[in-house]
Image (cartoon, rainbow over all chains, first blue to last red; front, top):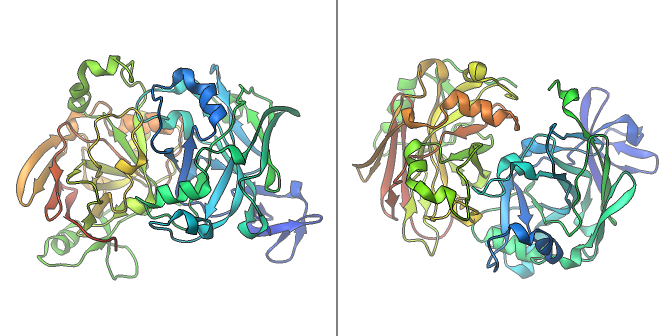
Length: 255
Length: 255
């Protein structure tokens, strides 16, 4: 099942995929364009992975001071940064390098504490596509990646669907890609994650209790390029979804 | 949602809801020997601020200009304490296996009352519902370049409370004495007069790129020479006019 959360006709609804768009929990069938798409579930703690694809590590290696890695580079984001499918993301005027990151988002479905690798997949409720933007102009070397780079309003896009884990036969064999204005700019496959999903759940749950609604953004492969105001950025993962986002400028925000 | 207070709000363990009462009511309950534990007074996102005390920044000295930092911090240095870390007054905090002592990060928590986006310094205090005491606990670590989540995100690593005291009862949040006692002996004194960014300025700089929502907590940062405590010891943090937060460190299996 593919599940969504949308605003329609004055209320917020749970919905599922339907041949004609979406079917709301109350039975109404509506077109994809007729609703406002929200992040598809109540989001708890948002954990993101830096440098979890070998090719992306190479891409960014010029700015790394760490050469050997003994644990996943995980960091936190807040639910306030999230927006849904077909949303708008602000590119501040004057920045030089703002880039998307197409990532498989793993949604936790039950409380998980000290979970071993072999039991980890049983904790997964499902998967989404995430586009975790970064604005590298703001990078500083304290508590990297700092929130001003990675936790800005509108800069974490999640959706369109939460796809039930039972419907994804192998989450470690999914092609993912980003298209900017229809042109493919990033391609990868989840089989190339350095720390796979069970490893990440085992690692995180070894020191923190994960709860239902927590989400792990599993990192992005090589191929991040600058985007500009007006660009349509589509991050997609085979079998999970096609997440559309538009980059907008300061004027819309009265800046 | 708007969250405004004119007295104090707290949530006694076992009580169905958080309730408002005069500060003295909560002070009495919180200080009664053998009294009940409290739940956290809010469930919003907790944002920590680092290096926002002049002496904490000064303690880094010339290191700020050397690798890996390479420059003094420009924007506020922020991080997130995830929801699994947040506990209330008198709730025991488990020292994780492998750590012999924990660093006690005594700080003022600013509790947001109105959605705050791009708030000016002059208007900033008007978005504050009140203040609470926060113990931002860490596994001691020297580098603030890219610290592992393990250091700050163990379950129970963010005691908070006992109550949120209304902003109107705290005339100047930038002149509050903060004392830390371990087993009754005072080991650290600091004052929010030492902040690099006073409360209003901090709110303004944070909300420039990231919206704060009602119930969110923004801590103002910890002073230099944070004390350490080990299992079996009781940590008490007192902030003038805001409250006294007490938690005992324990060993053993997680609850």
